[in-house]
Amino acid sequence: MPPSSMTREFRKALTALFVIQFFSWSAMFALWIYALPLVGAQILQVPLAGAGLQTVLVTVSLCYAVYALLGTLGGFVLPGLIGRLGHGAVLGLCLLAGAAGLALLACATGISALIAAFVLIGIGWSAMGAVPYGLLARMVPAGRGAHFTRIFGFSTVLPQIVTTLGLALFAPRLLGSDPARVIGLGAAAMAIAGLLALLLRRTFAAADADHEEW
Image 1 (cartoon, one colour):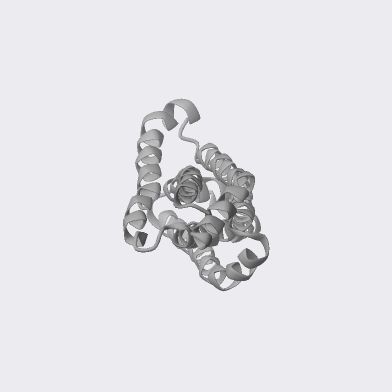
Image 2 (cartoon, rainbow, N blue to C red):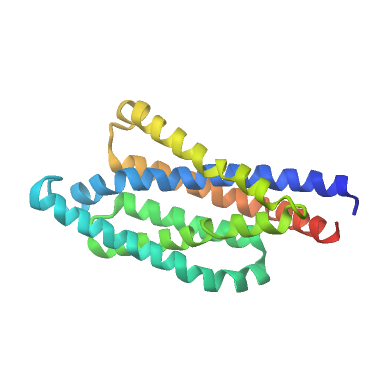
């Protein structure tokens, strides 16, 4: 296949990855900002001060450890799944699991639901930290890996800026600064990312195939 065709497919896939990254990372930034007040008020029902704050910090840290561990273990499982289903399908399904975890967290009232939520979030996190970058590495032209990796770095920086500023400016007005509502919004964002990955899985496959032939 000619290089021009490869470039066209690559650009489509790269644009799709940027959009998916934007929504999925926006969801995670919402989690990182609002998990502490949500766990304190809704699950542990303790004030974020004194001994109550210490309890919430320990609980949230353990929850983060759960999804970080799953993210690490996912590195051993995902390659086999990608070989069977493809990058787009695996990324989409994992992100939908992460969205389900965020949705569960938004309405959780007990420790069991809290743990289950972070297990699901860990599944989404495992794909976020590996699949887009693995796919990018397969698609980029020879000798351009470092260049496109630097560009792709903006796909995580931009959602951080937009989410942080957006929540600071609009969350109190539109969501009442309710942590559950913000994390529910994050669940919707990650669900959008997962659905896009599934819908665009053929685009990723085409870009990968073009690179191999090129």
